[in-house]
Amino acid sequence: MATLALDIGGTKIAAGVVSDDGDLMHRAQEKTPDEREAIWGVVERLLTEAKGTAGELTGVGIGSAGPIDLHTGTVSPINIHAWDDFPIVDRVAELTGLPVRLGGDGLCMALGEQWRGAGQDARFMLGMVVSTGIGGGLVLDGAPYDGRTGNAGHVGHVVVDVDGAKCTCGGHGCVETVASGPSIARWARDHGWDAPPESNAKELADAAKTGDPTALRAYYRGATAIAAAIASVAAVCDLDLVVIGGGVAKSKGLLFLPLRETLTWYAGLDFIQELRVEPAVLGGDAGLIGAAKLATLAE
Image (cartoon, rainbow, N blue to C red; front, side, top):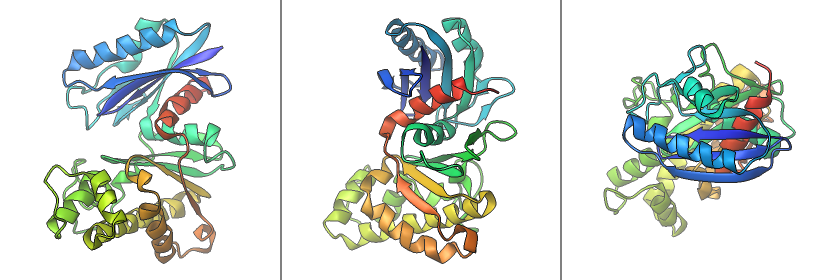
């Protein structure tokens, strides 16, 4: 027995087959196109291919960039402009003939890490993805927490600078405006990092590893903003673990060392001072594994 899984993001779309034990038995992905029906064409191809590699399937789990709407089964990802109120649940159900469960991509990442990754001993956990944007998902008392509409856990839009820059969400000063990959690279260029305009967080990390002072400051600034956001969420949800993945997290010590240091500035309450922050271990597979797990859980 196995489950089909789908992970939809602004950069790539992935599909897989996950066993009941959480083993990813098949995985394929394609770049996310720009056109509405072209995006659906990619989803259709990937799911059809995945289904063809599997035996008996019990359902489909979908992790999608948000916002999502659990009540209507639709998605309107901020970073996929061609999809607005797209009826993903109905379309996937028609294609596969299987029951479908939808969740946010951050929630599925968190659930995957809690099931088979760095969070296997955690019951109150935040999963974060720090990449082109910053996403997140909550596992509370061992269960995924969707919230009222399915959008709980959007930690990237915790405000860390009340006078900060405008965010893609329409707000101002969100942690995503400070600590996402593009944001830290842009800040570094604005403050003296000698790099082309298209340079990204990976190239910034390479510069930081050679001791470039501006690059190091940029990572420290981003880590501090993430620490402030984590402390806020931990105080509200009484967390015991935060697991962080995504492209920026691949910089390892450049992010995690200053993050753990500055977290002590913000985590003043006794009950969050023992909060652990760990790197994700499942990489790009966490969303698929978590989506498959979500599909097996009762509504």
